[in-house]
Amino acid sequence: AQSVTQPDIHITVSEGASLELRCNYSYGATPYLFWYVQSPGQGLQLLLKYFSGDTLVQGIKGFEAEFKRSQSSFNLRKPSVHWSDAAEYFCAVGPNTGFQKLVFGTGTRLLVSP
Amino acid sequence: GAGVSQSPSNKVTEKGKDVELRCDPISGHTALYWYRQSLGQGLEFLIYFQGNSAPDKSGLPSDRFSAERTGGSVSTLTIQRTQQEDSAVYLCASSPGTGGSKNIQYFGAGTRLSVL
Image (cartoon, rainbow over all chains, first blue to last red; front, side, top):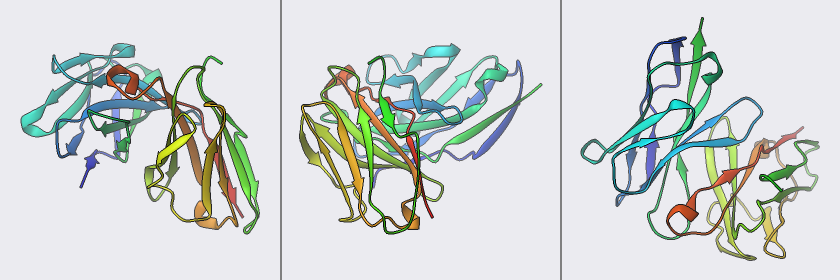
């Protein structure tokens, strides 16, 4: 069955510190991979995506993620966190053909301490 | 419009009533998706439209749920005889198409449904 695991429900990071949010997936073939961010009362905003090619992808707001096929992982990173990054982050996978029936992880809530 | 628009943003209803949730996708986007976000279940796929057709309705939880799309644009999600377990945020997304980079989904802010 297709699934996405985000093992950390909450993470607290000091402002200016680095961040890594973990995502592991189970999928029949190499999927398309996404990270979305959701601020309170808002919809989901796409941070970055991986379709193919270079396994290190850059996104908006200084985020990057690395696809590791051998580990079935797509971890999200940021070198220096800002207070405005506090939000909930969702990893998602979808098929690499046809329409995107996305399967989401349960999310990681990021808290940023001063 | 500039983004995906959903209305109403909040809806409070009594158990047993019917509700309609509306989604206006980004202009020109041919694909439209509905998801449900609830505390116990996370984000779940409900239904997908390509144009006015719904090739995949597999996520609709019961026959009380239905959706339609007209003119290849606006979509309405209808929940009949609402139950308390229907309380959730209903998110709509659209994408330009279904191949490669066209697969990127853009989400609306959602409709928060509360069933009393």
